[in-house]
Image 1 (cartoon, rainbow, N blue to C red):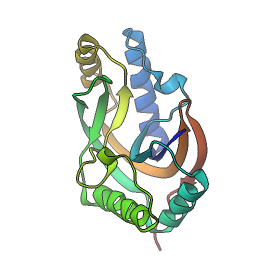
Image 2 (image 1 turned 45 degrees about the vertical axis):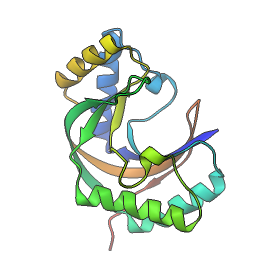
Image 3 (image 1 turned 180 degrees about the vertical axis):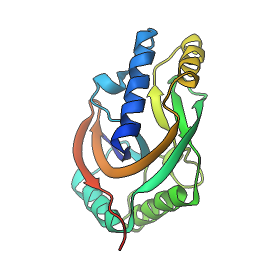
Length: 179
C-alpha cells in the first residue's frame, strides 16, 4: 500500500474544490478523487510503501511546529505525464516551503524517504482536480477550472496521513496557532 501526507483546507476552500470536481464531472471529465474518498488537499510527501505507525509518529511530531497557513490558489496547471493530471496551484510562499522542508528534514533524520518528485527542490505544490485524462480532456478540464470559483484564499487547517488505492484516512490532526 502507498501512503501520503496531505494538508487539508478550511471548509470554504474545500467546498470550492468539491464544486469544481462536480463541474468537471458535469462536463464528462470524471476523476477518481471524490469517488475514491479523497479530500481536497496538497500532498507534502508520498510513499510507495511505508510503516503507517512511524509515519503517523513523524506527522504528530510536526504538528506542534506547524500553525495554520494561508494560501492563495491563483493558477491552473497540468503535469506533462501520462497520468493526465490537472491541478490548482497556490502561490508558493516561504511559509509553505518551510513546512515542506521541515517535514522532509524530519523524515530524513528518521531514515524515511518520499518519492523523489515530492522532495525539496523537486516538489510542485498543487491540489489535484482531475486525473487519468486524455490530452483533449486535459484542455477542457483546464477551461472548466479557469471558469470556476475555485481560485482564491485557502487556509491549511489540518494535516493527515492516508493510505491509498483506495484512499483510507489513517489520521487527520488539526493545525493550531503557535503560542
